[in-house]
Image (cartoon, rainbow, N blue to C red):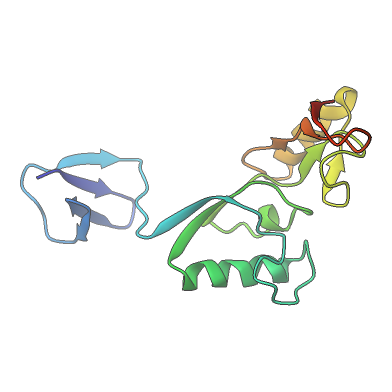
Length: 155
C-alpha cells in the first residue's frame, strides 16, 4: 500500500492507494507544501472562448465563469488555461485556473482575431506584461500555417 499524509495550513488528509481519508494511516509519507485536488485536470483549455456554445461573449468574465461551471459539472476541478483572447482567465484569480493570459503570436499569424500581436522585437516586453498582470505562464505561438503559402512555418 502506498500512503501519503498531506499537511496544509488548515487541514490534513491521508491518501492510500488513490483514496482520500481523514483517518490517520500508519507509515504514511508526510508531504508538506503540496496541493491535493480530487478530480480531473484539463491541461489544455481556453477559458476565454465560449467552448460550450453558451452564447457568452468571447473574452469576458462571464464566459470564464460559464466554462468553469461546465468543467465542474464534468468532474474537472482544475484547468491549465493555454492562453486566451483576453486576460479574463487571469483576472478571475480562480485557484482552479493556471492561466497563461493572452495568446502571443507574430502580427497576422495564428488566429489574428485571438492573439495579441507580438513581433520578435516586442515579444519579451509583451510576455513580461502578461506576467506582471498575473499570468503564471505565457504561450507564444511562432509556428503556424502561413497565410500566404498554407504551410506550417516559423516566423
